[in-house]
Length: 168
Image (cartoon, rainbow, N blue to C red):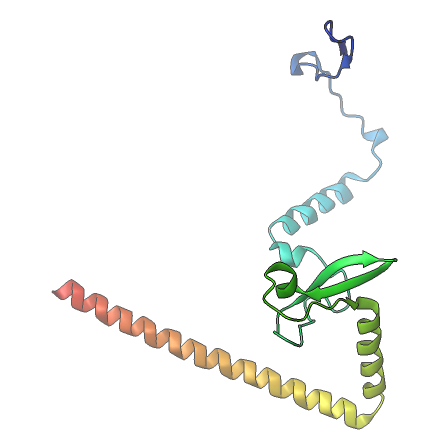
């Protein structure tokens, strides 16, 4: 700390590196060096992940709720009286949705969890879930195959066009 002569206030400043003294004292380490190295390696690996993969969802239905009017996502609007309220993102950000109502997130989560609990105790409910899940997976797989075929077709067309241009 040094004193500013004009104001009389104390100012904090770093000492030059030449004035610093460092010495390793392994006996004062709080964590074993192996554990510390493993933690650093894990933290370094996390930095390479995409931001959406680094964070865990804050709520049970984060990213899953959709507006019934326009199909846009629902996002947290505010916290009112200790409860989280959600609202249509398009209505909030672009005012392009007529659904301007706010909903209590805990009420929606309780309804979804209760509905799942009620339907999953019945064998027919579980069979329906498995059937719908498998159908959706097959539809996604078929879409991927079709999309790949479309992309390969466009690639072949671009390569033919490139050959024509090159020969011309």
